[in-house]
Image 1 (cartoon, helix red, strand yellow):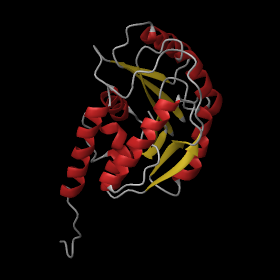
Image 2 (spheres, one colour; image 1 turned 120 degrees about the vertical axis):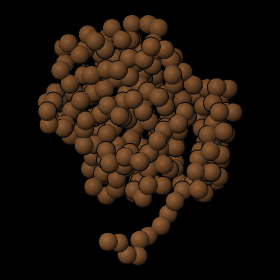
Image 3 (cartoon, one colour; image 1 turned 90 degrees about the vertical axis):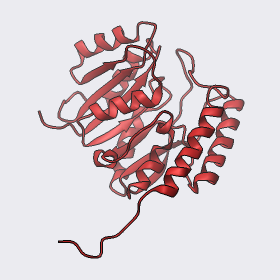
Image 4 (cartoon, helix red, strand yellow; image 1 turned 180 degrees about the vertical axis):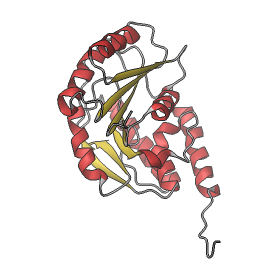
Amino acid sequence: MASPRFSIIIPVKNEEDNIAPLVDEIISVLGTNPQKLEIIFVDDGSEDDTLSRIKQKAKAVSVVRWISFDRNYGQTAAFDAGLKAARGELLVTMDGDLQNDPADIPMLEKNIDAADMVCGYRKKRHDNIIRRLSSKIANGVRNWITHENIIDVGCSLKMMRKECLENVKLLEGMHRFLPTLVKMEGYQVIQVPVNHRPRKFGKTKYGISNRLFKGLMDLFMVRWMQRRHLHYVNKEKK
């Protein structure tokens, strides 16, 4: 089977009401040609009807695939499983809560010619003031420690060439640092503004309390990896 142009990787947990409208929005933008598109849902231990809704859509739309975990392993594991299973030339990551807009995908594709990875940042966020403020502080601290300039590490909407991930190993919590890990492998990353929409169905899975301490540990681990990463240029080779 020929590789599709796009693989859309979407981790989900308890997002039963978002599955059908999200698939409908994606195919309204990209169509249903399997040579162009595959949609990979990774069910991260949902306790509602998320998996059955995915299977219903897969019966109706041939480009829908799924991976189902036996329990909740976290967002990084879900992204990792989906990225490894992807067959597309261009890999797109996004959230399953309808806050990322599939209509932005063609715009990401236009920008991929100028880089190897295109990261979206939410120019106008539809979150409460506490989430916006905590995110702004966290982004600033991360960039200060890692000497980076990533505007919005929490935005899942990204597009990358598949080869960018050949030598990248994701550890727990590392999906938030994927642009930095890709840069460490010598690839170019650019950032573009994307749409952000209010959540209509379900509840957010992440807050300040369940990210603060783990996030700090992840941050210092990435900084250690940056300092220890091997950089060399061959002078001669036979």
